[in-house]
Length: 237
Image (cartoon, rainbow, N blue to C red; front, side):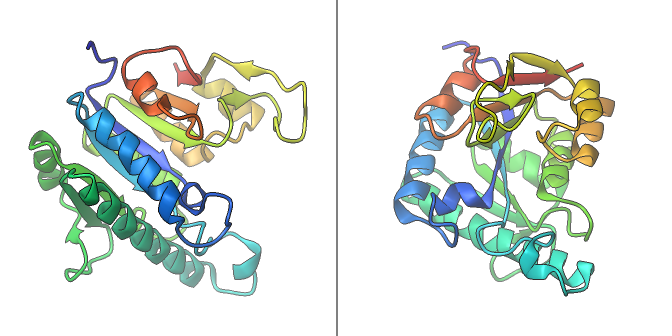
């Protein structure tokens, strides 16, 4: 089967793993995602993943309002490590070899992030999960996804969401919101569209890295994206 993308970086939100519970990891949902990733991996796609931590703690959320921003962001980064370990466990139960690489050193639970080693893991057919964001406060996991995608020379970022693509308004609140099939980085930035934060979009724009925004809740969508089906929205130059 011809592939549109040979090496991808998948950006998952922490909320995707919570599956409507709002908090924690839903066992059924994480195995559904792992099953889809197993299917895509079997096509020969090299997969790296950045997962958020919003199902445990968000550095910019109401719960961290009275906290120092650096402390809150560090807690958020550690939340992503919990999700990365959960996802690794689910993938390995589907017989997919997986490595977690953390931007914050914690040798007992994850390898330190070393770019060349990450690329080698991908070449050997392992799924690599990048945890702890960039390791620095003030940068979101969206920005971490953009940065890691550049570093491993990914063909595209696959941004998994709970809606079908990029809209001109929030489709949950505005019933006749219009979806874009294609949109430029500049339009996303100028219109303030909530695709990824502006730092992440700017990084992709400067390095001409395409972003495919798609609905994770429709089974088989990850496979459809990597095989080149026209689904979701393409953010490009």
